[in-house]
Length: 402
Image (cartoon, rainbow, N blue to C red; front, side, top):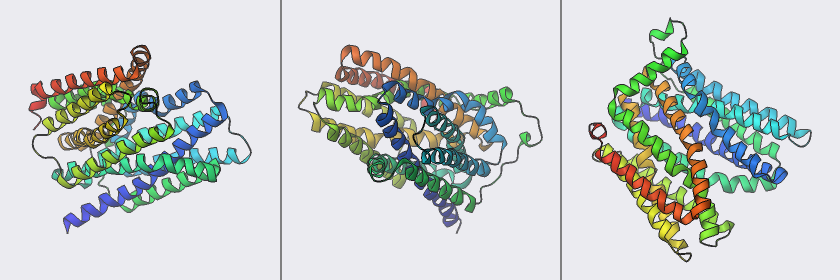
């Protein structure tokens, strides 16, 4: 009976999150299409991407304090509704004519802030509902849901943008946010009682408490900086997949789409396997192996001749498959080993560190890929990831995580 209860609660929340995740991804893609069509400016598109993740990087530690002080159920519902409200304002203005770029950017900013509240709260809520030995399985299912969003959203966004106007796509996202809010409202989430309930708000002190909680576990603290290196090296590669497909392999938009779909299919399969089996063996080895396989695949991709597109597609399938065994296992470890009272701050801190790593990596990879060629940069990135994997394997603090 107890097993049925937690499964019902977890999958009720995640059913709503799946709907919201897909509709939000569709709208994000539709906005990119709109900006591309109306401005044709690479600078505008770059700014849109920056606005999308910078608030999380900058505001994350402060947001984490509020997440740990507040009713997490209310935060999840409120952040979803704020995201929906921002979209509704955009839709209302769109009815009267062309959307000004500044308003689109402002909407993306508000949505990013809402996501910065919602994401760590959802991660902090999960261990309140799910037994510890099921956290890795649930992280795998979460990764699978995200991969379904990656699979469906580009094609659906392109189709809906052609047959509907932007206002209708925005309305779809508002509906998704409402569905997510309703599913959260239906679930009973334990409210944590702690010293913050009756004390004054001290942002800096409470941020330090979150940092101290992470630092106290040497393995997780080491994993934070492994994550920084991984994000710095690997995430910018995602932006170079289209360039690799078209410039090195001489492909078309079809080949670019095929690579995106292949990666998402691999991620879906990996998430489902993690969800069905949980973690097998020592999790530090699983994380190191996941990073090592990604590095090896990037090395192989960088060595391929222009005729090797099919091998590249297979490599992307492998990369997608291994991704959940890094991200999902890391999430489960944090949920298991950090006290629930500080989880919001810890997840926000991790998101912030990785949020700063991404633009730094993007700048470096953009410069070097232009200078030495995109295929060579794939090779170099793969070698660097292999070194990160070796570091993760050798560091005593990570070996002692279990």
